[in-house]
Amino acid sequence: MNLDNGILAIDVGSGTQDILVWRANQRVENCPKLILPSPTTIISRQIRAATKRGHHLFLAGHTMGGGASTKAVREHISAGLKVFALKQPALTFHDRVDKVAAMGIEIVDRNPSVEPLTRLEMGDLNLPAIARVLALFQEPMPETVAVAVQDHGFSPNMSNRVFRFEQWKNLLESGKRLSSLIYEEPPDYLTRMKAVSDINPGTLLMDTGASAIVGALLDPWVAEKSREGITLINIGNEHILAALVKGERVWGIYEHHTSLMTPEKLALHLERFRIEDLTNQEILDEMGHGCHILPGAAKQRPFSHVAITGPNRENFASLGGHMAAPFGDMMLTGCFGLVKAVREKADHS
Image (spheres, rainbow, N blue to C red):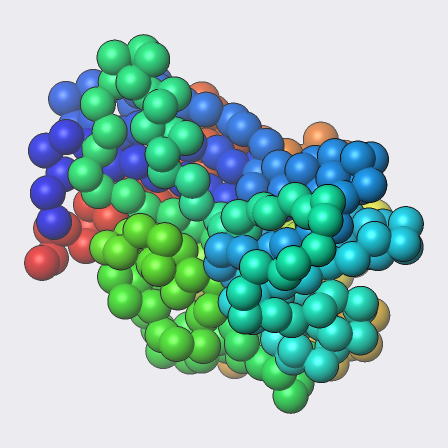
């Protein structure tokens, strides 16, 4: 792994894609940084433009994150226009092609012969566009690329929330450090990560939740308090992830949807979470992802120190936590986590 010309770290969220060009010989604060619309936001805008023009859609490319693009596709179909898709990009909308077809999307294996037609390339990574931007400012493109995406995993016959949380449970019980969760070759069931690898072979890949926690631990206050035990909360545009961390070990993980949460409800959940009183089934039943805590976690420390990061952190200021901002930039928390994980991997390779 050659880090001589830096690391291009890209944290792909539902609202934004956050980009850091890390250089070993440059202060982190002076490294180039970009906060841009997320790939799904860009695709949703392109879909709505096609809807406005009265064009049918042909979706090519790769599986990617949904959310905004899924909503735009539904609106396009509701407007009486057709949507065609190759199988791989179609899996963006559901892991079962019959469910995709039920949305009104026609699965095809070639360019459809209908007019007027707009073709869109799906995918979570657009390196040529980033390279063009960097070139405008005389910034060389790093050889090493690391990307964080939230990958629920391929689970056609079970809830993807359940499947995703099984991965968190396995991580906790393995005792592995979060920074070790960076893949050169992601497992086949992580189809969103595999799609990024297909776009750019050799990309290092990590889950956005793991990269956010690793990055938040680089905040000096968080690093100090984590020795005693800390509750780290990442409040994203779509998801809330909380982790109970002491030293290098994660004792518990909680994941829910931001839109279903209030500060009061989250405070109660976290209080019960710390004392092993919150069940996974309870969170699932209210459409969250789940929670898992290792037996005996409550005896470690109360995890009473609280640190908050994420673009919606201000909405939960009443929790009274420290607003974590590693290297003075909260929006790059996930990128900082990616860089730390890549450097650790390089040191051990």
